[in-house]
Image: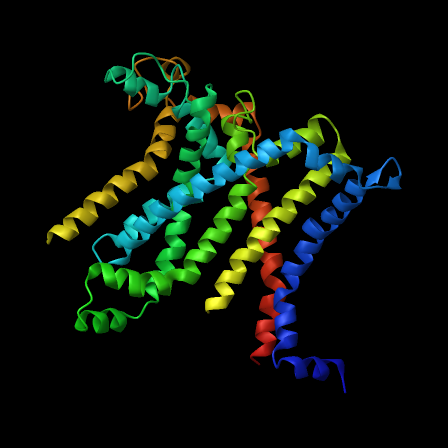
Length: 290
Length: 94
């Protein structure tokens, strides 16, 4: 039996499927697996011999744990707000209407623009002295003195959440919109005939039918938000006084500013494990139902 | 139009303004001269529109080269990612 015939026994399309995923696998091997292997090696090699000292240190590193907690709070608030706004966008765009194409395109603009570029735009808008927001607030007399949106630890965190929400709510919206589009209309008709009101139809049809899409959107958003780097880096650089130092910024600082390569690699491994666990939990939920 | 439709349009227009505002502000700022950028109160549109910023990025930096780099990377990676799959797809359906 040839190799090809043998592979066909598993799945009729197996050779086809293998070739289809080949580019992705190769890409992963070059840009992810190989660096990941180097990182694992660096994280356990302390002074030439293999040791786990980096991992022991990591659990007692209060700065790391603080940045991790900060990242989780940030991800929690940010993803919740994005989800609500994105759901709103999806529901508004689902109904057929005039100008739907325009609204879809216009609402997708924040997601399409590069994060670093829009980070600079927001930094300029929230700038304390010449920023447009402070200018408007001062001119309308709402505030007596300019608000230090990015220079004050109390404000900076919220400002970053706002910018992140602006950028990624459309992404949630697009995914949920795709989910809304495949719900058959006769389900709603049948429910209406049975006397279900708007609210009941939403909770009994829309929400359950949308669950896999909701979980997909949440998975993508949570994983991306926990690893957030570019937006925070451009807006505050982790400051003021480390109030917005997310875990990826802490790892970068530890690795490239203090040149603790081994320790930085161990930190990356820990973050990778955390993200993996979150991804597994969400995937588990989405498998069980469907 | 029904009341619900009106509400939908009003909400959508608010969302569109919210989505586009930072981008439009960035665009307006890009046409302002150096002094006008740092001037209070800020004006919505540039009072003396100038293209000097756009000329400047090409004069002070090899911006054309940057654009070319991006296009090269984007097109090469797209082609490389699609090539094996596309080839197999053609063979498969023969």
